[in-house]
Image 1 (cartoon, one colour):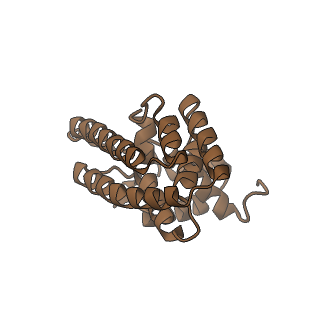
Image 2: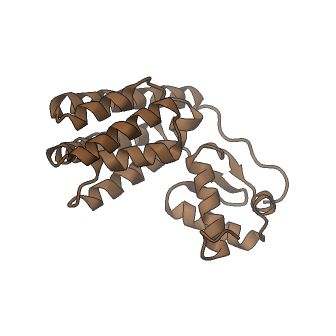
Image 3: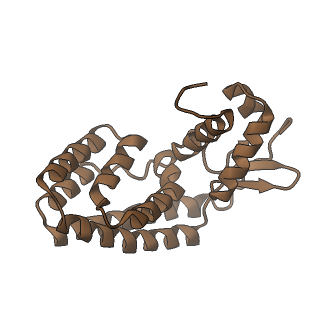
Length: 216
């Protein structure tokens, strides 16, 4: 077990959670406990415990007599999530720009460029934390990250967040204190991504996940 984990249970939980958030385990994919346990190298008990924790986070859904599946979102849920994101993220952006320092501006430009050139989950998290974080809004940032996690796997598996130099430009606008331009850029981007997710979900709404085979 890696030293980064304090217990086997934490390790299993973190591994499965990261696989869901990164899209390795896709929305609608059945989660066979026996298979996951074999892959990770543990018994089924910590796997089941981890899946129950992830169910509490709305990342996994249990179906009676069938097992667990990576949770999918409805079109209505996606629209609601993005409306909440718009409200919270524009609020956080305005506060962040108002207290921007030269050091944060430089870091933001660096992160924006890195994210556009080689997107990754870690780069995305780092960029938005730097973009929104101020000393007096930790709860707002936590809520934003929770909402982003709920749709993050779609952004990866459906490839709907490929928008060229968008992060670099947003970073430049925020760094130079152009609140109006940065807010418009952010709102337009959120609307675009929301619409693309909705379109894909609408097309796939009639295709339920296949029933798993073998032991769960």
